[in-house]
Length: 127
Image (cartoon, rainbow, N blue to C red; front, side, top):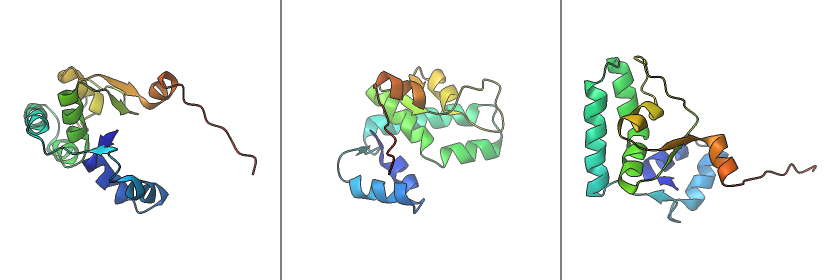
């Protein structure tokens, strides 16, 4: 599952993935973030990012996208965030998802570990 904000970002890509998301947008795969618990969690994340030692452009870029909402929803649901990013503790020019997850004790895992844990396999079609 993901959140509507991520779905909106994917749809903006206007490609095959965007169409895939459009076709599934009302199937419950993309959770709403307007509930009060997620809003409160988001506010905490905003406070932590704003008070952090990140550059102003890094703060604006991170807070203007879906990532903080995703972390807020995971925090509220006690869920795990899946990301390709790795923690970068001394980061100043970019806010990394794992850094914020660690700050709020939100579990995270990289995409490949999640696929292994779910025992996902891919078959290549010779056609």
